[in-house]
Length: 395
Image 1: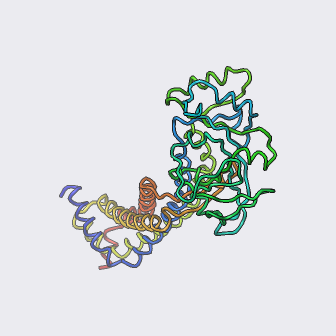
Image 2 (image 1 turned 90 degrees about the vertical axis):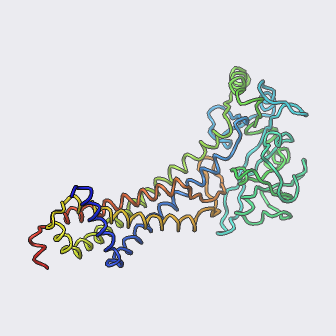
Image 3 (image 1 turned 135 degrees about the vertical axis):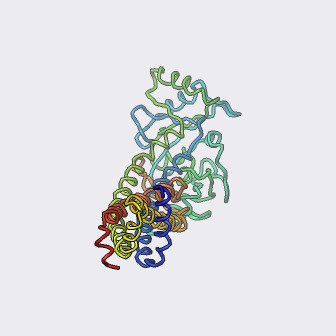
């Protein structure tokens, strides 16, 4: 028999004998499944947060900040500077003039529903042209706030995550009471974690005078950005930087993604070591119970390489089954789970949903396969080196 035929024959015998070692096999699968659940669950936080931030913005929408600022919190413009920015070339024109929205961005404390502890919630002051810059915006409950009043509309995600943000409720911030009159949807983007109100009222409530922190612009077409940048950066009255909205929010997610993924890989690595030792014990037990069988096959002329492959295939199969169980359990338990976390670059809460993506499930399976192969390697080598004469004496 050639090597391939021998390997297929030995592997078939090995797999058919798994039910005889069902207890130890199940223990190995459960250990690997547990690692995959944790691995997938932790990384799904980063995936969900990243998806919420990536889903924010349109390539034709540009955010203008003061030079050197990486968030709206550290930026700032006077009313005159905001006017100059709004008059730059390359901006799409609407019925009321350029589609440009100077905006104010502040942080207010509000309790989370689940814990009751205060969290930093973004409160954004808008000008009348703000909705022309955000074509994805739509009211799903109630109505839009009335300019000049202390009314606010709340993002759908914020309404789900924070207490007292339903239509008709009142939010107290500083010396102002804000009446919630509507809930809005923004295609699942980070904007749904915000509260929106009239910019003039917010300026007065927080004694900001005629100032803003950013200007949102709608380009004539996606290729107009360079002309806009040239006009803004060559104007000696301005010191600004312009960035497309999707790029801005993608940058906002980088710090948290790095932290979560580092923690996730560290936890999965430590748990993976335990799972590997469990797989080693399982496969050593399998080799031990099959000592006579392996010796008989060797005596009949089957090569040691075929034996090694058969043990590794068994370990790989058990690990893949465990990985699949763990992945499906993580998907059922965590995919779509709504939560909120701190965006460490803007120091505000962002509501999002865990995302157990197909690529993440595939990574979990690959990690399970790696654990299985590492766990089966030493037992496979032991089986291949088993002295035939010594093993046959056990018959």
